[in-house]
Length: 522
Image (tube, rainbow, N blue to C red; front, side, top):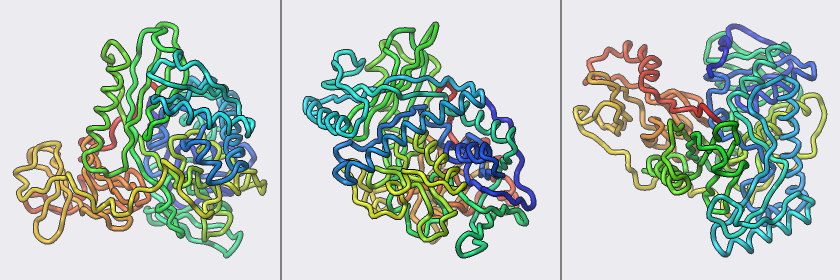
């Protein structure tokens, strides 16, 4: 489903609200802001619905990734209660947007099931059930025998939902423009310049000379904020999660959303259809840049499918997406620490990006109108952080772990479609062979804080294990917090003039298919 296409920013634009990022968070914020009569500009580095939000699995749920008992132990009952209510509010807002903007995205309310796979999980889930009842949450214990997966105990949570994320995002974008909002694609934001100490707004600068946006309120809705004066990237853990989907015979599995208590947890979704059903299966999360993990993770998901479904998948979609887990289990949504209150950020959604991103967008739109929301104290990005079980950050020495990206001494040893580290002297380069005569070489240091990048053979990308930045084979940024591309280095061995090598960056990257797949059916 291709998007309609929006122009790149050219010149100066002055609006009430500037939003960086056209994923679920940014588009929700823009939609709610234009509905309230504010002027809005959305700036997107690539294309609307072309990044991580479109590669989610379509779950909309009030349940956060961390265990309820852990969340209450760390935060106390009230922040956990309002967080759950925030998820319910977000699902209601999505349902209203689907109805009011006539978005055809297969939205449907369904039950969710949290199940345990080990005998000890029975006690764990019953503790969560007790905490949930104390907080007034709707959830109940059910017979694990009716769960279509191996389970020892299970909880049912009604009133959740699912949708097709890409269709929903494109529908939101259409509604924003129809209501007078402006969307700019292929516009790389590089920084903010404050216009005053308090409420003077800011100028949003881009890599295109002479093009910027001035706004009273600014929202960095690009999952990993690039203006990060308090190092929030040290408080989140960047992971890749893997999924596959295909059609199965109708009635094979009961409809609903499912996930278990493992860490990382497995998740599944079944959408009932008239002639066949959609079955989605995912999990096998790993830290971004973890050596050797991408290939084994995709194999793990494939093996899980084989164990659950008698026949092999027909024309399956396979993909992965990036998630950012906060250190204490709650997201960071609100004013950017160390910045004026009209500059907002949102990150750390974990595996609940569609729900929390929708809530974050609505919260910002309300605050831009001077209306506080009850979730701001709990989600304050400047709050003290203590880790919960299962969400603690990986050691900061991860980038010093044993590498699996191979090192070559001669480019002749590099096959077509393969990548490696290459040392043509004192510098380390990341090299990728496009065809028999073309090799792309980039500086092997992440432009965020200089960590060494690792090759990801599944996504064909260069990934940074320190803070989750990712780059395509030509060095262009795929995921932040990096905002600058890796420097493309001409190689004498390729017999390519330096100008030609630079000029071919975009065309070669397209031929290499470095952005990976986007799910077509979910």
